[in-house]
Amino acid sequence: MTEWLAWFPKELQVLILAGTPFVELRGAIPYATVIGLPYHQALLFGILGNLIPIIPLLYFFEPLMKWLYKQSPRYRRYFDRIQKNAVEKGGSIRKFGAPLGLFLFVAIPMPGTGAYTACFAASFFRVPFWVSVGSIAGGTIVSGLMFATLSHYLASWFGWM
Image (cartoon, rainbow, N blue to C red; front, side, top):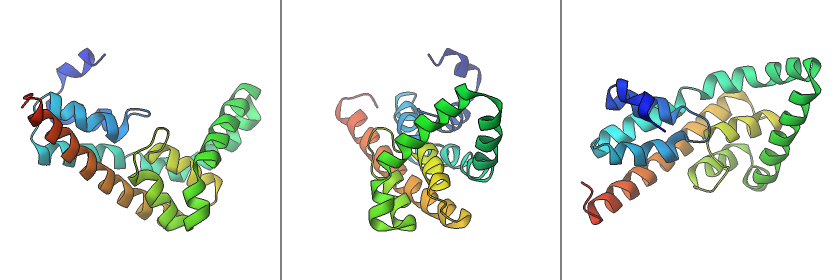
């Protein structure tokens, strides 16, 4: 799966994986541990890689979605499904309000929650731009700390480090 990444330095591998949808931070940090990056580097490059797409996603998602809606029914069905998923998983946003809800949505590791989905949820719930950026970034940092600590602890416990 990651053979194509072998051409890049380890730090850049983690940065790229953390910025990839579905893998994000929760896959990149354990990967960094497996390839031998120290805790602080796994954490730093995992968080940075996951944060890089946030601003473009938040800024361009709504105009892109409107344009794609006009272009094709296939995209409309795809984004309707994403919207439904974001709204269903966005209970914390409705329950706690936008800033805390988005933060918890990203910080608490559950399937289908992460920075990408939070960006879509923020767009659907019309959360102000900088509130979204701050909440998602804070949740990403907390999630990164949890995953880096857990993955390095497990790796040392199993003797992989």
